[in-house]
Length: 231
Image (cartoon, rainbow, N blue to C red; front, side):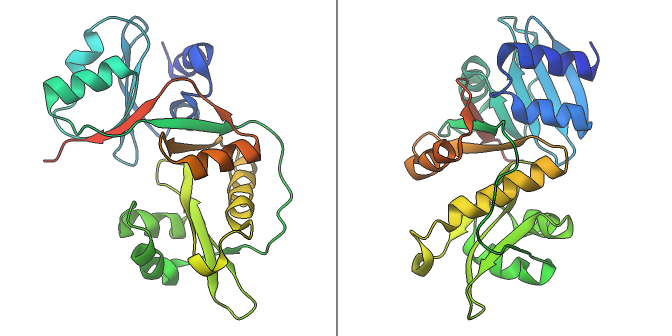
């Protein structure tokens, strides 16, 4: 199978739960290292991340699990094998959300942040490395909303593999709808660039789940796990 045929197969299984992999396949942002329709997919993204997806009950994919890597794993059987047999970290599952509508009106001014803002963002957002935040800035994928006094009220951006995220609203500016508006800007940016507008949300993050539902994103039924094994 070529990349188009693989993305078509994943779409037929669940186009929302596999939206991140489908997007990467369509943009050719990596390499398919292994694929079996009866077993699974091993895709090495240009960011260094591995996507590992279950497409059947065969064990061939289990034999191809990298010894050590950062991986986004789609399928509980593969994830359990990686944790129990390969020593990967046990982590909380995430839902994948996908926006499937048209562009949205944004009611706040949003500024594209350049590299000078990277240290500030890194100091207030520890999920991504400063290197990954720098990558977002260099690609015009880092955004902020500012008060009339010039204070940053909130920021958001795209993670290196293409998902929406980094959404942070500072305490003094919460409950003003800034997260709602910034995510709309992320959605519009993804759509303008011809990409899927998707994000991963931890199972326990009720606030973010409520935000995705308010924005009308679809939620995939298949969990994914962001796990790793250190060198």
